Image (cartoon, rainbow, N blue to C red; front, top):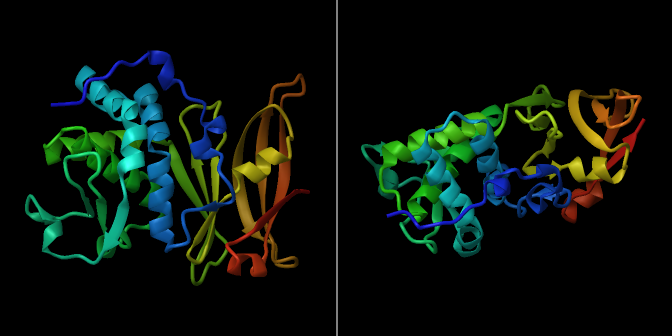
Length: 271
């Protein structure tokens, strides 16, 4: 049976730009591998992704109640839950197939990821796939046992939580460095901009917002590496709440090699 809840609908209209889950420091994750870090990032932001799906998804009343239940209990779930990773073994064989993740039915159960299958996910699909998987696993924690329903609802959330992800590779040959731009259906929300270099991921939105360019949201596009300066450059389209309206602002992203050794540092400048 699902955990009972009381929810005011206004709770769902969440401002992602000011949420702690979307406004943390530069480095995303805890210093593990790239996919482990992204898993942590998506998990910590999952209530925000679900809220977006509730607003922009085509959901029936049962689906809506199910997802609202996760949101209401998300604080308790995230506090009690530990995410771990291990090599594939027979424990991941569920309903005739090897799963990417599994968990138990109570709030304190670990979510265990199959590291072999996790790293088979293409980078362009990683964020949405993790949203789908984590909704599935949190569904177990709130009392749902039907794997087929959890696969269905996880996919629904992933499809409507974010509009799309775009990758801009700056390392074309090895493809170990790129900018990922995540955009939302809500046009009032700024894109999330992640800089991936090797096994580290950096969220640079905080650096943009520290510049206090204007009171409004922004979209990002056209990232590339400057062959002369070796820095990353791109464009932001700011939708300023002023009579002048929208304006395009070039940005430059540089990284500190020493900083990467010490945990990572990214610098951003408006050009």
